[in-house]
Length: 261
Image (cartoon, rainbow, N blue to C red; front, top):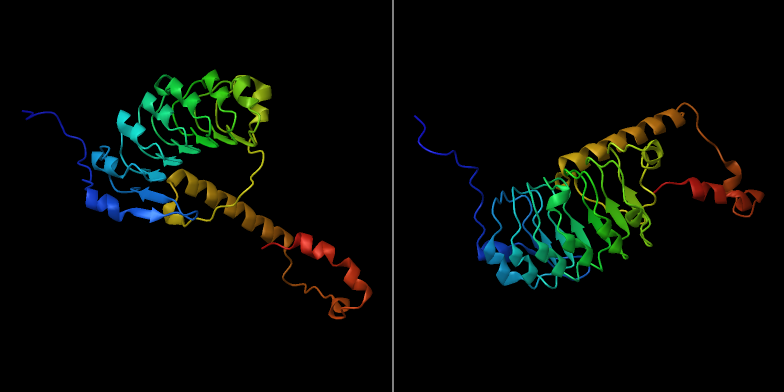
C-alpha cells in the first residue's frame, strides 16, 4: 500500500554563508555570484541579500521556477540559467534593464511560458533560447534592437518572424535543428552562424553535455582536416629565408596569413 506521494530529489540547501563564499570577481571587476552545479532544486531566497551583484550564475541545477523576486537584482548585467528544468519565467524579468546577457538554454520552456516582458530588455546583447520546447518566436522580440547574438537551435520552430531576423545589430543567429516548413528557410539556417567576433576559452568540465559534444565534433573534424593536409614524410625547406636581406624577405607575407596560433 502506497504511503504517500513520491517526493522529488532533495536539493542542496544554500545558506547565506555558502552564497557569500561563492562570490567571484569577474574579468572586468564585477561581482559574480556563482551557484552553478550545486544541485539546487528551489531558488535560494537567502541570495536576495546579495542582490547588488553584477552577475548571477544558477546554471546546471534542477530549478523549475524563478520567483518574481528576481526583480531585486537591478544591477544584474549577466544572468545564466541554462541546463535547469525551468517551465516558466516571471514577467518581472523584464525589469532587469541593465541585463545584456541572458542564457535560458536547455530548459523546458514553451512559447506560452515566455513572458512578453522579455521585449523590455532594451540593453540585451546576447539571448540564448536553444534546447527548449518553443514552437514559435514572439514577434515582440523584434523590439530588442541591441541584440547581437540569438540562439534558437533545437526547438520546434517552423518559421522565424521577420521582425527578429531583421534586428539591426544581429550578427549571429543559430537556428539549427528546427523543423522549418519553408525549404528556403531550411537552407538559410543550415549553416546559421554568421560571424563569431570573440573566442572564449573554458575547461571541458564547465561545458554542458550538448556544448561538449559540439566541441568534440568540431575538434574531430579539425584533426581529420590536419591529417589530410599534412605530409610528415616530406620536410619543407626554405633556405632563402635564412638570409634576411634576400629576395625571399618580400614573399613571407603568405606564411603569416597561413600560420595558426
